[in-house]
Length: 310
Image (cartoon, rainbow, N blue to C red; front, side, top):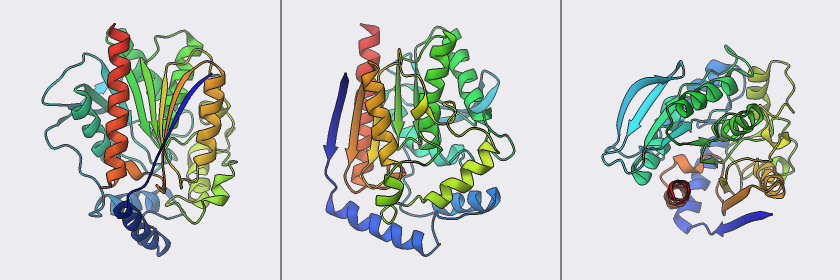
């Protein structure tokens, strides 16, 4: 079993900013909303307009494109050092996400690693229910593999869950696997059965009620334990190396620890970074913890690409 965990302390200025965000969230002026998909998407737009949100690396060029029949955008850094392609999967609970929501993280990773990124606009519920998002990510992965270039799956929140699930699907089908998989605050268990939804309930931006609403809109009666939706319950044998960045105050804290343990027991090399005091989605904020998380993810991916080329 190979599980390497690193605990990173919170800096005082980050803690103060997070407290302000939580106050706004509890007041209903930021992020938290339940109900229909349009209300959720409007809340995401309000969140993106807040000054706390990171804007990404302006040196990265963003152009529309498509891979495997899936529309999205290409992000190209000023200096390309790797022929590998990163696939960046935005978050948003399979309902309220967008390319804009993931763009800051995607551009930062592109610039830091020196690799092109493709961000697919994968289908979401309720318009396109489960397993549409999973199918789209698998299609993108297969198309990239067909070019002969190595690729890496990276995702935030729901995108992190999709990255792990897609790797499982590709492995089961005998397809070419990504060099590595990286999840940032990955959403891995749509049954919401982890204890941390209780003990972190007052500490996180995300809530169980939000999760239930989004899951209902995406799954539409489907089996929440299906590993294509909840990779916590999937087959881990033979998966590529896995890196996870996690906030210590996330509602999904427990499911991430469980998945890391199961993957390691199945022989996967797992690297887990836990950022003290950070809530769900912290990598998208202008926080020192976010900068540190993206730097560590980039260094890890860079190392895995070098290992693959050796």
